[in-house]
Length: 79
Ligand code: FES
Image (tube, rainbow, N blue to C red; front, top):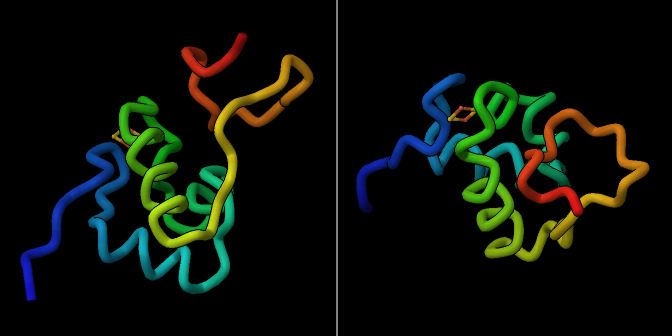
């Protein structure tokens, strides 16, 4: 088994922690944030969180509409 890789530095969470949260039902970056805090700091890990959701077939969030009020979606994803 490979070593765990730290995904979120602001709220320390490893790839295994994130996968566990997804396995427990998280389907969006916001849900991951609510469950373990990952992605709720600087936002640098949000793309990685999204990649993990997609790799596990658990998420389809790719962009935010202008009406989105989710503070966890990074500004660079907004139109
Ligand atoms: S590295 Fe995850 S929120 Fe900053």
